[in-house]
Image 1 (cartoon, rainbow, N blue to C red):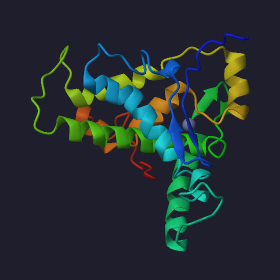
Image 2 (image 1 turned 90 degrees about the horizontal axis):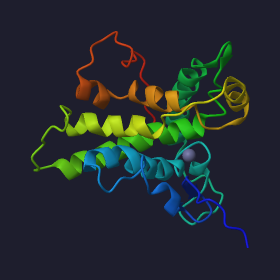
Image 3 (image 1 turned 135 degrees about the horizontal axis):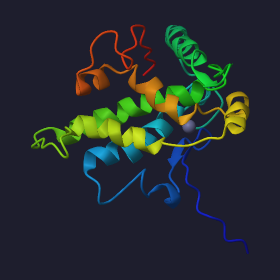
Image 4 (image 1 turned 30 degrees about the horizontal axis):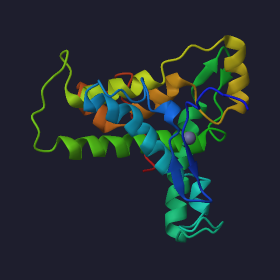
Amino acid sequence: MAHDAPTVNAYYSPLENNINFPAGILQPPFFDRNADDAVNFGGIGAVIGHEMTHGFDDQGRKYDARGNGQDWWTPDDTREFEKRAQCLVEEYSGFTAVGDVKLNGKLTLGENTADNGGVRVAYMALLAYLAGRAEDKIAGFTPEQRFFLGYAQIWCQNTAEAQARLRAVTDPHSPGRYRVNGVVSNMPEFRRAFGCGEGQPMVRPDACRVW
Ligand SMILES: [Zn+2]
């Protein structure tokens, strides 16, 4: 009997319409029982939001509540979704994976939609959690800032150049750098948290928003 390393990942199943979090991902940097709550909302909270959003990405939206392959959206909703998703396609297609290789915005659309929607869902959960609580700074950072720092930490990674080239054409996930910068530069919530002004690198004038 094989004893594999635990899976450090999570997934959404459109057929069962559920989200799944194997024990392997419930550890730092995704979840740390000793970290403050804002950091965990930005970590495992964003992962939970990500998996939920897969139910409403370019693939997941084609399954109904019972997991049957059926497009249950109105034509208006579909049109609006496709318009907003196209914004993400163009944004991520502009990011450089390595050297002269750009990301493929279509290949990564579902994951990018889930990243962007997931962080927003988790952020909303953080605000609901914080309501009425004292908002102390920790190490000089507000809870909102710690949320985004927690999110950035989960995608901190090193990738060899050859691997980055391969992944740019095969991996439906964007590289960690863009999973972070692509998302936060779309979020007025991030801009407010860190007091960023117009024209600064993490403020996109043509910010995308699907969810
Ligand atoms: Zn995903």
